[in-house]
Image (cartoon, rainbow, N blue to C red):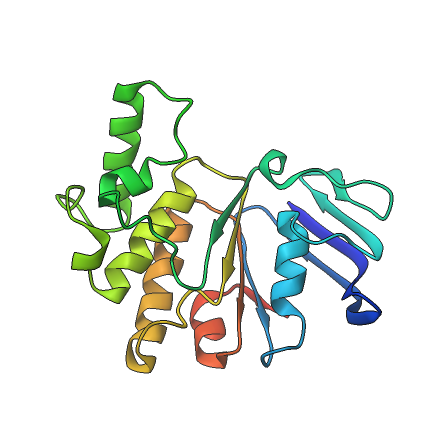
Length: 205
């Protein structure tokens, strides 16, 4: 599904990721574990298409999406993203947040997919609620449902549990793992928390 081959990345004259290789198979959950500032998020952003590679190649589903010579734009990579702060739209209710990326569907198809995602993440009956009225764990599940709703081939998660209480993180990570496995999703997460990594991932790098 994903193959990173001898990739180097940097900002200006500074190289922050050097000669990294990794692969992720269909249906697998991977995790990049390391301290703040080691280049985890930079690599995630390169996979998403937000950062150019300085060397090497990134392949998605067998096609090159990033080389030194060319880069497929983010919107053409079929990737979902869950951000550190959830990034829910405060002016949209839960159902509309989840359905935001489903503009190519008919109204009925969209409603059915939103309902399916609410059930998947255990938030049935909460489609009319507002993000500010939800707990941190519930907001996390809405962000996950929104990212999974368009059925991306790969889901990227940037420190997805960092805004939650330390006591909640591991249990929410296990919940999210179960949701991803049920959805048969392929996912790559970055974290500095070892317990999160081991609760969530099939493979840790």
